[in-house]
Length: 501
Ligand code: PHE
Image 1 (tube, helix red, strand yellow):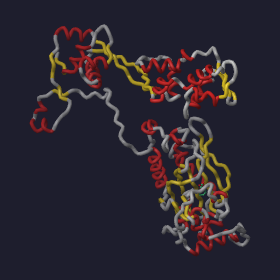
Image 2 (image 1 turned 180 degrees about the vertical axis):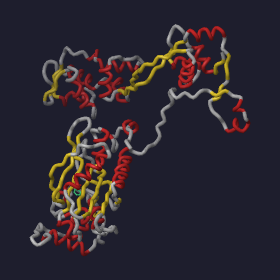
Image 3 (image 1 turned 90 degrees about the vertical axis):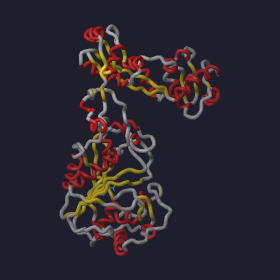
Image 4 (image 1 turned 180 degrees about the horizontal axis):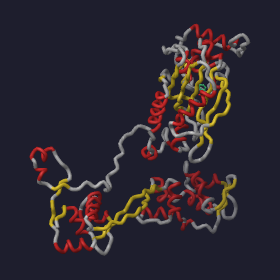
């Protein structure tokens, strides 16, 4: 029998009576583990070895865990300080123990979170009592960390999960393959095996010299483990933005673009937002300390001012509140991309506005919100509008159903809403795929005459602003938007999530 070098080396290193792991065979043969695996698969195909597979979990300690190995877990340090201060007898102020326990910064919260959980005692409005029966010398978490640091293994999966939740270790799963010789292999080894040189790569030289005709090629094994390559890739938010654009183009829409920092006129005044509206205060908007935008279309400015002051139509009524051109010229980061819709609908952006027309943008907007799992200071809005004769709420709802169905979302719900610029107005909701929660995903409506008349538009306009990040949550089940955005984002999740096309 003739076998390639690596296969013969693996056969000679393996045993018929004991299963040997690939890593050990790699050590004995001086081959890379991937080469041993590849050889083993070929040998298995020839009936010379059997391969068994199992999944093994290994745990790597984090830097924080190494700190605690040196200093002790924060809750144990708190316990020892509490016992020293007599807290087994009488409650001691937490403040007195922090210094004695050497707890700094976040360690205080960590100690508090774990102290009661582990039965070291109680903390009640800042007073600590310690339970004398607790035994910090046999703390399972501290023991597990010490065992792992010594290269040992811990079998208790719950304990490992708990330590992983505390960010003290990271668990990795990998496949362990073990190899055993078959009787045929033993017979073949006894009869003697010759080595055959095999070539694993065809070169241009071999082709020109004709050498390729005489060599033996090693078989290509698609099951062998290969090193993981993590190349760059487009962020899933961008990919989903691109997909939303494709869908809208497919629905007959054209794309709008325009400034991120814009005159309040386009962001608010055109939308019949009174200048004393709460959303126009410094609390909600990011005002910019830059010169005002003065090249506003004067006639439109006059018509918008008059809509604000007197309303439109015979029985129109405005806000009777102050209106000031300086205020309209002031520059802020746009809080919605409806500023682009106003630029386009006014004709200022150069687009033709004879009905029917459909326009969209998928662009960033900025709001002075409080960060939480569903709110960011900046996010992408899927803005859009349709200009046509005789539009109704049915057209609006039908458009959303058609749009969201392209992303597999078919249970959109609508709720009547109020916007100063649309009547009627509707908020849109979807159902979170894992938590079942109802999530707000957008806002929409038909523009009011107070918006359309100054723009000189006689047909109807239905419009909306949908949150791209919320669409992403519904598509992929993210619960915290900060998993995909910003400094806290989960790289592994971003690498692994398949973007549905
Ligand atoms: N501008 C609204 C928002 O940001 C969305 C919207 C656009 C609503 C157009 C109605 C019409 O929530």
